[in-house]
Every structure is written in structure tokens, then in C-alpha cells.
Length: 134
View 1 (spheres, rainbow, N blue to C red):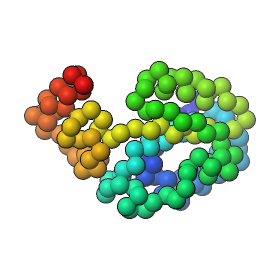
View 2 (view 1 turned 90 degrees about the vertical axis):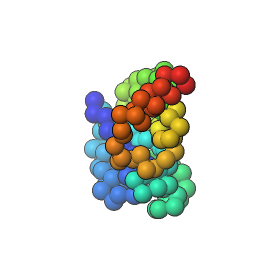
View 3 (view 1 turned 180 degrees about the vertical axis):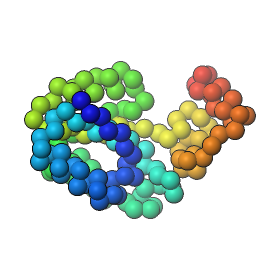
View 4 (view 1 turned 30 degrees about the vertical axis):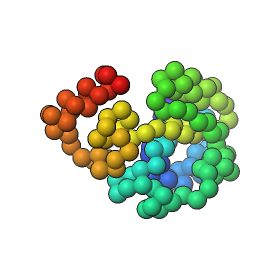
């Protein structure tokens, strides 16, 4: 089985859609793509940079994919969804994993600046404290 993890910002890339078409063409039922849907990318919110109109689910389905959704913060749901995807036969599977960037860390949550920014020792200490106590 092959798993691909990608962000919703990557849905703006042409080669992604070429790969989506090829995966259906070759009936890659051993392929599961997990798309992190956090509505942010390096430069900010997707809706302000290059919005993807409409829902992604019908687009992927129109290319022959089995489409599933999950809460990307719920470990039990993640494991269950991946198991269901593994058992899908005859077509590749896309899983839309809905998440919050930086969830649980006050200065990181929904802040696109943290997409590629390093963290200081003091910030790390605060972040770990917030996650452990959250």
C-alpha cells in the first residue's frame, strides 16, 4: 500500500490533477491520498490566494476515486478510515482530513506564519505546556 500525504494548497498544482487522473486510469486501489484540509498555505488562507471553487469531493469522484472524510485530530477515526481505505478495491482512495493548523497552541493555531517558521526554545516550552494541559 502506498500513502500520500498532501495539503489542500497543493490542489492548485496541475501535476497533482494529472496524477489523480493516472491513478484512476491504472486502477491503483493500493493508493490512498490523505489531503490535509486546513484551508491554509504558506502565504495565507487558500480562499484569499487561489480559491478552489466548489467541493473537492465531486471533483475527485469524477476522476474515479473513492472519497472519504475524517477528523484529522481524532486518532480512532484516522485508524478506522485508513482501514476502510485499505479494504476498498478497484479504485484509489482520497481521504479529506479536516484539521486546524497548530491546534492547541495559542500562538500557532490558524496562523499561516507557522507554515515554515522555526520555533525558539521558549516558544517550544510554551507550546508543549499548552498541548499537555489542553
